[in-house]
Image (tube, rainbow, N blue to C red; front, side, top):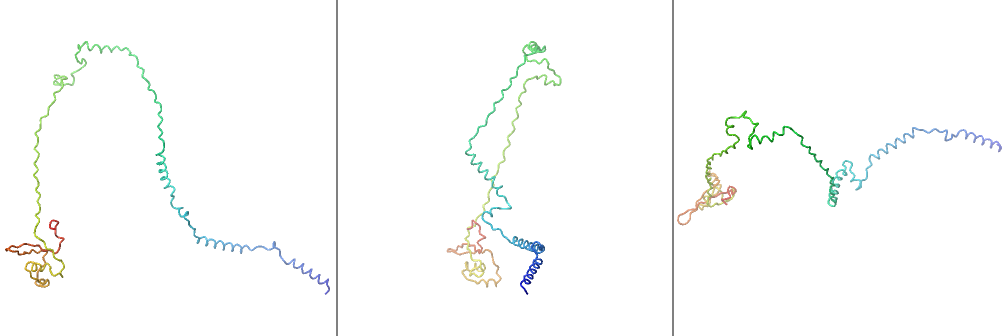
Length: 253
């Protein structure tokens, strides 16, 4: 092939490539793929935000969302400030407004009255005595008319006899006689050598009897045993034997 034919084939091939290759304006973008990518990013971002934790500092901790400390602290601060300012505050005397001068009442001149002369004629008629010329006895009793306006005699009340006060008999306080019998306290345990079963034999007769033996004989356990200790000269001294010191009174200790 000649050089001219090869050049013609190349020119034809280039012209065909130009017609077969599409430009950027000819390519239509695929919107479905872009929308899928954006939706995926939104889901991932939402998941990340839901797991996100806010970093708290000493400033953010004091910022409470449920309670407003400013409303409760502000009245306290205002009362403290008012108290401090009240001590140094200069007392301002109240300004007294001038009082209005009272209006004097003008006395009217006496007008002539023809009935005023009756006041002066009363002295001439009664000659200075206190006699009511206009008085009447209507509605009055004979006793009140005869007595007139004399002052009533004061009625002295009759003295009432004094009632004798009842004599209170002094209440005799019955004092309980405290027993002076000596008390012997023994152990309350049944395994002890001396019990309430054999205390009388041991302390009075000076002989030992086993507790189990006394139980076998059918002896009953007494809450308190009274024994007699013999002394020289044929005398005896009584003793109380107990095993529960809580029964003793304060005077018996």
